[in-house]
Length: 128
Image (cartoon, rainbow, N blue to C red; front, side, top):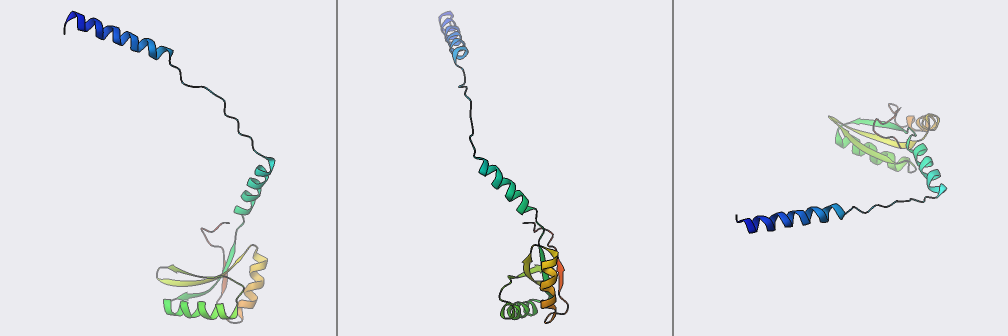
């Protein structure tokens, strides 16, 4: 490299450093305005999400028996939701979504007339 090219490179580098020293990132203040209603809604949602639900299991066995139990239950008890879960090696029919143990107990009395082995449980992963 020649002496002239070295001077140009050094001058270019100095200009670059000078320009960088004058460049600053933008600074600002971010303000978030939120209504008190949003805070109330978030608190309400938090309360709702910690409610433990109860369900009633009416059947546990093979798939064909589970489908039959689900169909019969739907015909007899139209007001409650019915789900079929697979938990190796059994299919389970679970009904209802009850917010209190008392509500689940009352429902269990009605269900036991047709499903004597029915029982109440709290789903492990289901907190709503």
